[in-house]
Amino acid sequence: MDDLQSVVERFESSAEHVIKTKALIYRNLLRESTHLDGGNFTEIHPDDLRRLFAEYDRCFFGTGIHRALRDTPLQFSLSKRMTSAAGRTIRSSRPGHPGGVRYEIRVSAFLLFQCFTRDDHRAIEASGIACGDRLEALQIVMEHELIHLIEWILWSKTKCSKPRFQSIASRFFAHRSHTHQLITPDEQARVKFGVRPGDRVGFRFDNADYTGTVARITKRATVLVRSERGVRFSDGKKYIKFYVPVQQLEVLRNVTAGLQGEERS
Image 1 (cartoon, rainbow, N blue to C red):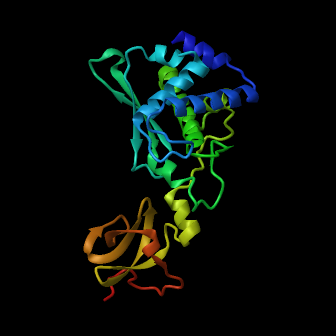
Image 2 (cartoon, rainbow, N blue to C red; image 1 turned 90 degrees about the vertical axis):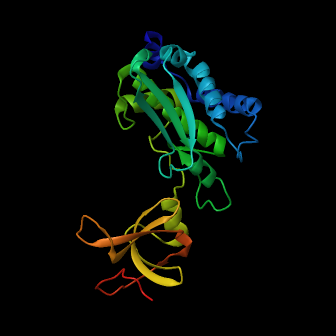
C-alpha cells in the first residue's frame, strides 16, 4: 500500500506519454479480448473490464493497485440500468473476511451503446476529452473509476469534485473535468423530441388519452397523471405513474389551469 501511495503522490508525466500509453492499452485490449470486435464494439463482457483494469494497473501503477488490494475482492460488472452515471465504484462490507470490505467497478453498458451511433447530435466527450469510439470512452470511464478505487484503498473516502481526485486524474490521465459528458436519455429526449422533466405532456395508452407531467427520463419517461385512484405524493395530490417511450409523448403548450392530468376518454 505504501508503494501505491508513493506512486500516486509523486507521479508526473507528459501529455505525449499519456497518449501513447493509452493507445497501447487500446491495442492490447482489442488484441486480447474475445468479445470486442472493434473500437465501436457491439458486444462487451465483464472480462473486458477486468483486462482493462489489469492493463491500466500495469502500465500506470506498476501493478500497485493489485498489490495494495491483497486478498480484498474486486469485481467488475456491466449495467443496463445505469442511465446517468457512466460508472460506479462500490465499496461494501464483508464482515469476517480479510480487510472486511469488497469493491466493485460497474460500467454503464447502456450509455456506451447509446453513444457513437448515427443519431449522435454532438461529439462525445468524457472527462473533458474527445472520444473517437466506444472503447476510448470506456477507457476514460475506467480511468475515473480507478481513481475512486485508489482513494478508497488509500484514504477510505473518495469524491471526484475534490482537489486530490482531480490532481490524480490530471497527472495520470490528463483529464480536464470530472464528469463523463456521454449522451444520456434525458439529453436525447430534450434534443431529439423536445421533452424535458417538468413538461406537461399528452399520450395514449390502452385506447385512452392521458395528460400528465414528466417526472424523470431514463430509458422511458416517468409521467405522473392526476387521479383519485393513484398514490398520494408529497404535494398532497394523488398520481398514477406511467412509463412511456419518449417518442410517444406530445408536449402540451399553454395548458389551461385546473385538474390537468385526469384521464380523458
